[in-house]
Image (cartoon, rainbow, N blue to C red):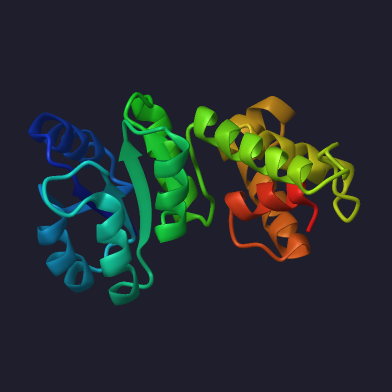
Length: 215
């Protein structure tokens, strides 16, 4: 079955361009698009899409507020931020609100498709500079807490799992990790599921936190 999507974006050319591009792939079904968060809040619980592609800067209610309002009403829906904002405050606010992925609008079209598939498979894709911000934040928090292990190696993980977690922290997609390590995407996915199980985490952000916070 195709992955069902809705798009919340106020710029007509971005919204329609993204819808038209995704419509070219049989792997996706764009159920509807919305210019405002207010429209989306009413429609998303009814449509129950697999993924909502969400802009932040919207007229009226912003995208982060929209996620907070609708998340409990459509619990199986995942949210992918798609925005120009890359400052720390917006990134962490969006993740705390319930976003599982965070892409910048300069992301290439092929990477957008790979990221949407990764999100649907349980990953937390994000642009590489957003991942670096997370790593920097967690490293700084670890330093502020005093001397600790900043080597970013977790003993409970195997050498390969630590290697994959390090690549995840750089913002690489599953396919990019597979290409880098010369293994299949399905093998990467299996390793990541084991990493999450071992660390008792749900997503990339929590795994990176464990990697650098060692909690």
